[in-house]
Image 1 (cartoon, rainbow, N blue to C red):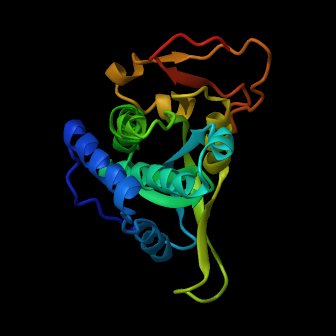
Image 2: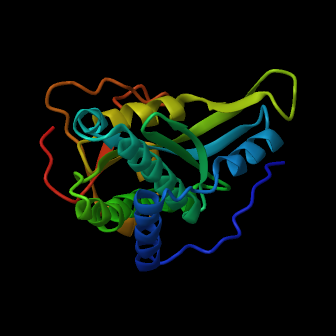
Image 3: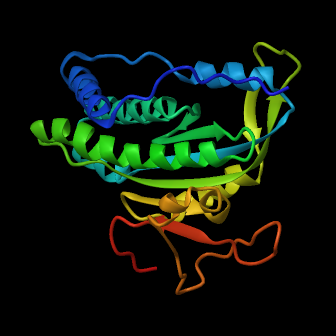
Length: 249
């Protein structure tokens, strides 16, 4: 039996942005440290080790971090990247997702799809939208006060069945992780996104409410740079972009 829990209420966007500003300001000014959030995922995975679970997988990656390292003090970069990662983790949690791990300046989250996955699809897409909003309205205004450059991200989301794997026999301490096609394709989708762009796979799009589907356009690839095919149909796997601005692929 799949074991999960989602008991916390989602904050409204204004409250989320205000709290983000307080935390980022505190981190830059006073060295505020965030409380850990990855453990909740670890507990969930250990309870469901070796289970195959349908889920939405979300990758969010910070854009331009290499340039930042050349232009800013190392201690400030560490604070900014850490704050970014923890704020993205907070957004994932607020949308009833789990934070799988932090990988460099990227954050990976997942949303368990119980039943038909419609709620998980809405949660993952709303999470992606909130991430952009939190960065643009919450984090960047604080960074601007210190004359630091704006942060931008690339976000990719896909749906599929992943298996919980445990590397070792120790049920409490052996490393646990997720493995499956959705993990791989979500990363590939994210790598194709432009700064501050949200891309989702067709398996996510098909599970969205019709009103939400209207907010997305199917990408027409011009140069055959996308080559991944559906594991069910064999056809080129469709990718959709959130309609915030015009894109030229």
